[in-house]
Image (cartoon, rainbow, N blue to C red; front, side, top):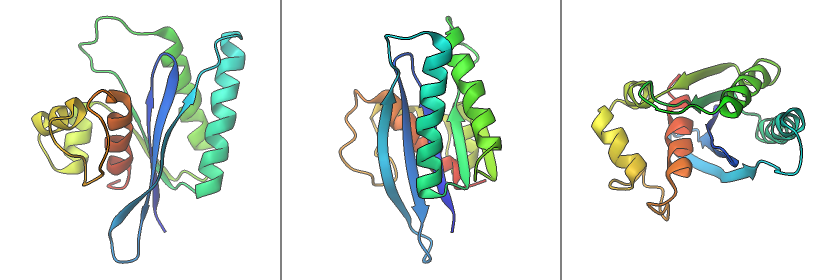
Amino acid sequence: MTVGMGIRVGSSAVHFAVFNVLPDGTVEPFLIDKITVPEATDNPHKLSYIRTNLLSIIMRFNVTNAGIRISENTAQTISNFRLYLEGVIQELFVDSSVEKYFLGNKATLARLLGVTTADITGYIDGVNDIANIPDIPKSHLEKRESILTGLGSLEL
């Protein structure tokens, strides 16, 4: 059974979406949520906290495919902490049940999902629905990106 996970690292939370592919080929969301980065500790403990919680989720759902939504090359500011966290998550994938994973921007997601980059931008901005998953407000950019990344992971 294929279980996919999409992750979008933010400055204060890690958003994730876990999907299951049913025997008939339909995709079912298991869990769409976030892990809040604890503020009252130093960076190494923050990284450990996120890694431990993501490992629990990966083990609980036996995730086999995963993806991390990375920033666009045109981003004007890049958070060092976000880069550290993305690296820790990649290392976690290697030491877990994850068999295939990718790091992706909008172009990568478009290629994996068989749509245009403009379509991906529309999904992220809340103009279009995402795979018939209801009730994702336009204001939840990171949640939408984690969903797209999770769906993309199923196409690996």
